[in-house]
Image 1: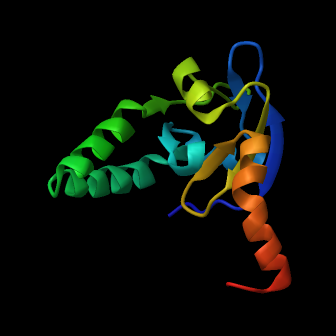
Image 2 (image 1 turned 90 degrees about the vertical axis):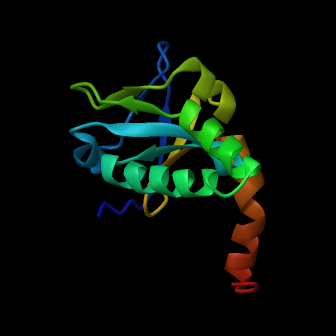
Length: 139
């Protein structure tokens, strides 16, 4: 099972492509999946982890209308992809819009996935937790 850790600052090129950090590229030699994710970021999944997520979504869809709608949203925002020889992935316009990605992108390891964040959105979502972490409260 792949595990992802670390934070990297990258930029999108004019064609909406992102170069994956060398540390992560090996996990996506045979492709992966990119989807919209909670808190307005994008999640890059290995094929194995994406299948786990898809099974969980399918189970949710069987339980309620809300679960079905969540599964619909998630699956319709997901794409399969492969990195090119330079380690770049192409991020479609609708996913760049969803995550607010224009130029700068934080590429963060998130244990079972890689998250792609707009730096301002990352700061807004995470800085309150960072303060609590630094102070050692509410852990």
